[in-house]
Each structure stands twice: as C-alpha cells, then as structure tokens.
Length: 194
Image 1 (cartoon, rainbow, N blue to C red):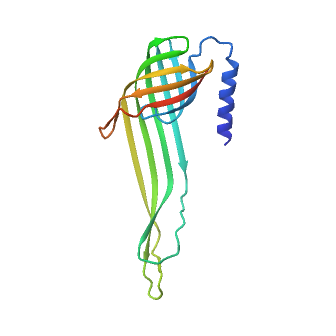
Image 2 (tube, helix red, strand yellow; image 1 turned 60 degrees about the vertical axis):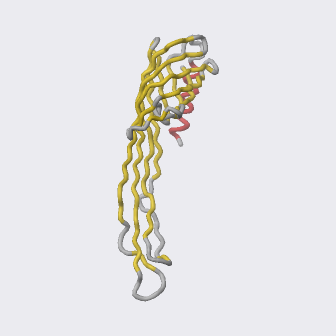
Image 3 (tube, rainbow, N blue to C red; image 1 turned 90 degrees about the vertical axis):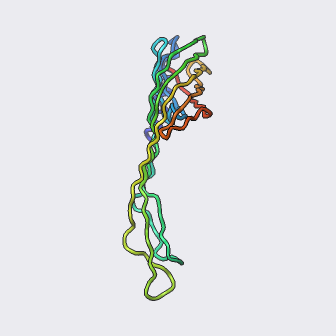
C-alpha cells in the first residue's frame, strides 16, 4: 500500500512542478491492450519518435491451501496456490501529424503476458470403516507456466485532455504467439505528462 501511495504522490508532484513548462515529452500512467500490455506505463517522446514501456504484475500467494478432512464421495480436490499474472511490453512510436492538442502516430511493439500458477491436488480414499472418504497422503503440487506473446503494428492518437493529462487510443494489428490475428481489440491508456 505504501508503494501505491508513493507512486501517486510522485505523479502528482511531477505534474504540478512542471506546470510552467511548454512541452511535456514524458509521461507516466496506465495502459491496457495486447501490444501495449496492461500496467503502469512510461512514455517518452524524442521529437518525432517515441518509446513506451509497460510493466504490470499481480500476485496472490497461498503456499498452503486448506483441504477438508473428509468428503462424501471418492474424489480429489484441486486448489490454486501461488499465482502471478502480469505484462511486460515495449513499443516504438513515430509521429505522423501533430497539433497543439493531438498527436497522431503509428507504432510497432511487442508484449509478453505472464501466467504462472501452482496448483495443489488432494486425493481422498475410502476408510476401512465409516461413510466418509479421508485424505490420502500429502497434496500433489504442479506448476503451470503459460506465457503468451503479442507483436504487431498499429496507429494511435494521443489526445491532450488538459495540460498534464493525455488520453491514449490505439488500434493495433496484433498477432499472438499461437498465430491468431486480433485486429478487433483496441487498446488505450491515460498518461500524466511532465
């Protein structure tokens, strides 16, 4: 929680300190899309060119999931333990047209969607006496790692809502690691410029 408060304070400070500047070529914010990734983004413009980097991670850690001691039927139960979901991406931007409030650009980029999970399966066996099935040994742990990659070009619009805030709308032509073309999914974001 401290890190989130620190990031928000840093964004606010950077936005208010640079109010007297005429051009805002850097920005921090949040993006969501297949090529841009989902998470916190840093965007930097160098005249006509630009770069954007995005990182976002969520983790839920439970190394010892609890299982019931008995069941009504012979079965096994699977529970999720430690889970990490995240994105890492990079994009190159090239400005096509620029006005006072709008920048129209094309981009090319790639991202990796990270999905890592530990699953625990507990087996149950019928006891010698009684009606309920009981735990049989320790739970079996399996790791599941599934990473998807997205690459491709697209066009985008950086619209300045105010002096410090930009709305990003992009239409990518993304190709996934399983060779599917996903042209119908737009991506977007909001950037605090400084």
